[in-house]
Length: 318
Image 1 (tube, rainbow, N blue to C red):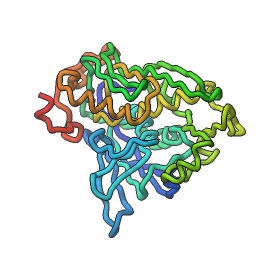
Image 2: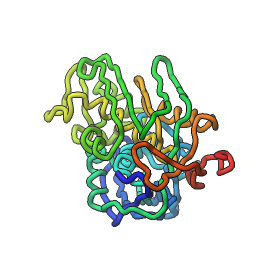
Image 3: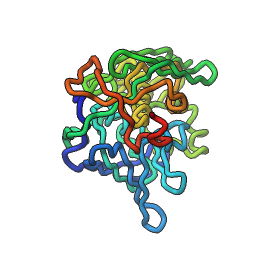
Image 4: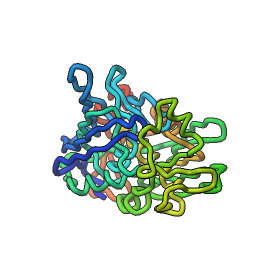
């Protein structure tokens, strides 16, 4: 993975599908973008044929129930952004304009694998602008009951340490830790699918969720059994998917995080919550820019974040 310079896509690429919650059809078009654009969604298909831009940033998150939704505070919203964003962060893509004509990113096969294929088909281009990072300086933690997420200082890169615990014997307690790189993302996380419990289906439908879920895009758990005829892709696919979700949510930081992310029985709500906690404490992080000869030892220079990534304006980062 390139550490020193920002990246974008070489070519335009598109895919279509339905949303796992809305069951609404949509097409996404991934476009190359200039340095310091970040990941920017352009939402089409709004009333009157209008379009609206929504930055992929934690300050634009409007909902975290069962997925992560971003919006402009008015009519434009994009749901279930986490798997696509995980693919960008996992493969080291910094700047993309994502055109989407529906309310939800297509679920594809329930993992990030097809988004990885899209990025591979488009190709990755290295730009001249230096890459920016957010370095965690002290621990921050959020919790809900016994569940918690935290960010801690870490000597190099982004490390994830995630565990889950479900009463179903099909899942049980699972734990995984990994240093994020394009290699580990492709091998260990990208193919892990979302999952759900058959006992919850009627309640979720009534609440407007899981209307596009099927055995083609979701691991279905009934009591202590996996209903998908092909079984699991990994023995511990459930915790791997939780880690995939965390990567996607952490992509909303506005720059790549240098730190240790830990999660115990967490989810989207806590993932976004720990980002908010980090940025609400100016002494908990610093913004750095990759210097010449940047390596895994993460030598860097102090800089402000670009405007799109600074939720309270540049002055808050001084």
